[in-house]
Image (cartoon, rainbow, N blue to C red; front, side):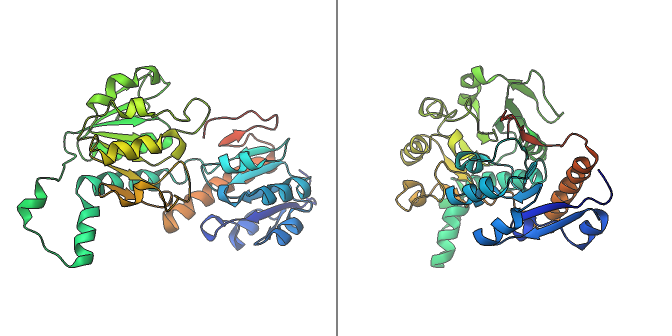
Length: 335
């Protein structure tokens, strides 16, 4: 790229995803950045921009229309989130590279997954309600309901970056780890064994914890169906940290209400925001967080900065981008 050429980056991001600071601009003097906070300013920022930084939930139909109409010069869209499915539904422009947040949030997501697991196992929802009422029940009445992860079997649906990190953390609790994946062998030593997606029915009945860490695509939508949930044992816990639509939420709510599984920790749901009419809100054996599992403060910002800096260097030097989730011809890759 010629030294006298300027590459414009348009940004529509949260503060946690805004990595284009003074240091970034010093390191990439050929870059100028224009930040947008409204549709009007977005239209101006996209004028002549080759690169666009954006997050998944920013995309409404109108937002996508502005990106397509005014982003005619775009060559690369960098999502600061792992998911891009809202953008895909709204309609991304054709002929551009699309990359996502890759592994920048995987540690925080895995930590959040384990926190949800432990919160359900240790009855935090019930204890929170008791605390709010300033009640101190007889200890014996509560301890029998608590579960211990030590020696428990965790079945992780998916063996991508998040699944691998969950496996590492699960081993700190001396858990057995099985991954359901298309791969033929474990990706990291902390995974004891793998089974194919077609054989998931063989391991679900033995799982103490089922972790959903799958990407969302045509093959995984509704993967954890009512039939598969029915295979889980009464003492099992389900945690969804990745994509809500991998799980049949209605079937899950029924199983939880009827006591057919022990509990659930949910950071991803099929419909977000979760409707106020959803029965999941009132179930005492459910912990819900509003899809915040990837949040990790300054450490995550640093990892995101490193990822975007690396990809920016690659883009400017003509090298292949990392964490590509859609190619210019529209081919999708797992995310």
